Image (cartoon, rainbow, N blue to C red; front, side):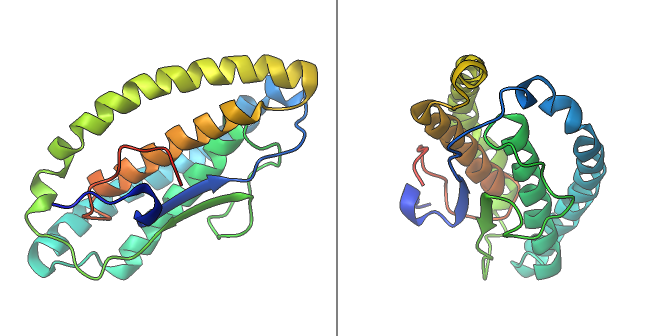
Length: 194
């Protein structure tokens, strides 16, 4: 099992750095995101069913059906847009869409031609070191967002180093999710780098 390097990993996530953010939106973004969160809740239930079907498709054919794969990527793209908004990374209200290019957030997963039928049984276990690392990184990201909230309130700017840190933590999480939820076989790098 080869570990991919950060620059070659087939999952891309990035957020365009904003030059200025609204100091008033930071008070209400989580409320404004509720309609998206309700829709995402329903989509994530459908995604769980799709992942269950994909498990057996991979087991018997070594392929993640392309339509189901695209659905999974699209749900994650919508999720990435909403979380970028809620985490103060962008001010533009996310579109009620999973189309690429409609929001200044990039989320892509390369379609695998073939997947291991045996890795599907242990990916969750192999992802455990990442889960432990991400637990601590999310504590750091929470602290970074706390500091950024006040920075935005007083300066209308998200400090770029904190911005890059939060985006990096989310990038790491999205790579681990793609691996653990059967979308890729390459072991994700222990890295926040693009």
